Length: 388
Ligand SMILES: [Mn+2]
Image: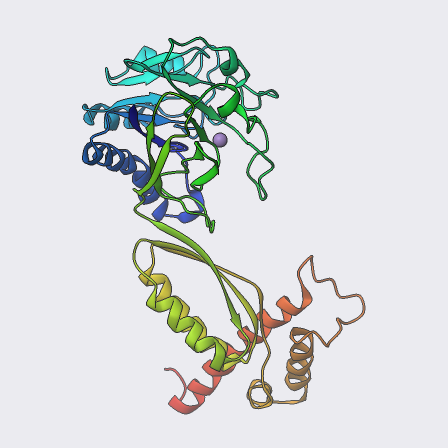
């Protein structure tokens, strides 16, 4: 029997550009995940970690980014780390993997750059399918069927690619035949590329990325403990948590302020400093209600690692009182009423008006919110006297 951890898709060096200052924290978290995987290996008494491709995010990385994960692996000296090139970090002549080797690999890091069996420990072999380009256009695991290993050996397949057309943006390239485990006599087929933990069938798993990087509903932030025996039985697999951030996406549908309140209460109650939240806010609310909700969202943002709000499905539609408060004088009143109709989806744009590619309801809604703020400033000025 052999016991090992299966991980994949570390994508070290992934920039996380749109996260501002938080990007540096998220980049560091991917490195820290290596330490945690090492700790899990120690806890579980496991001496090997198989990484099924996309260890690095790209092929042209700063030397520091290239070396940092290797030094984390070196520090976990009681573990042997087995690395496979994936589509983000394929093994090309004169490329990334040659640089890594030229830099000098830690003694406990093994690169799997050729499709040939490698003995991990006596009687246990890994059969790797390294990528040499981003899109191989053929199943790189075919060779495993005919790969010779000694009688009674445990055979572990290691590959990076798709077993079927995953929905969304996951690449459907580098296809891996689902039946490979059976046809190649593998106890386990360790897969990488899909970022959530996913059991494809008995003994065929995607480990998923150890540190989440997408707002998927799938389980992420795990590593797999695998116990494999010779003789064709599928390996026993136990997912174990290693991620430090949680990524979620949610919709906040502002039907009315009364409905939105408890929904926002629940989101606030689940908020914490390690949560990366994408919030799609939809619906139509009055201006005052919307302002109160926005105030709460500002507070929510301060309680999270990161809050990404999509307001494209949200419009402000003033109630009659608000409309009256906006407009003083017939022109402003007419403008406000027209904007309200547009925001509410019942109005039409004036002839010849070009919305510049924007959704008219959104544009009208934005204009109303601005008018509302101006009206509030005006009224506050009126009450408090003119500014000096
Ligand atoms: Mn990949």
